Image (cartoon, helix red, strand yellow):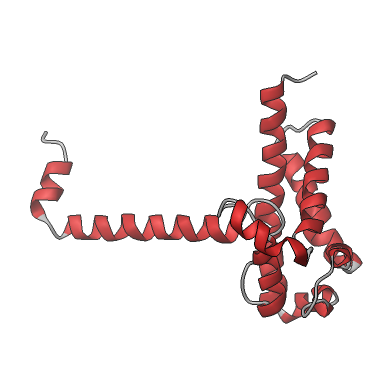
Length: 174
C-alpha cells in the first residue's frame, strides 16, 4: 500500500480538486439562468435547510457538480481507489454537516476561515448570491485572499514603475 503521508496528500488532492470545480460549477448555476433550472430544486430549502437537503439535488446537478469533478480530479491526479473513497466520504459527510442548522454557531466558532462552515452554506441558502463553496475547502475565501494578494502586488509594481530608483535598482546593470 501507499505510505500514510502520500495517502493524506492524495485525499487532500481529492478535496481540493473537487472543491475548486464544485465552486466554479455552483457559481455558474447561480449566474446563468439556463443552468439555474437544474439547481433550483435544491433551493426549495432556503428558509430551513435540513440535513436531508444536502442530497436534494436534480440528476443533472448531481452529475455536473458532484460526479464530474471526481472524474476530472482523477484525470489530473494519479489517485488510488482508497484516497478517492476517503475523499468522497469526507465530502459527503461535510455536505450533510453544512446543511445541519444546529451546527451553525458551533462551526462558525471552531472551524478555520479557509473551511466551509455551516453558517457559510446556510447563508448561501438564505441569500443565494454568496458562499458558493461546499463542503470542505472554502474557495470563496481562497479566491478572495488570492485576489487581494494580486491587487497588492499589482499596486506595488505600479508604484515601483513610477519610481525611477525602484526600477533601476531592480534591473541588473550590464
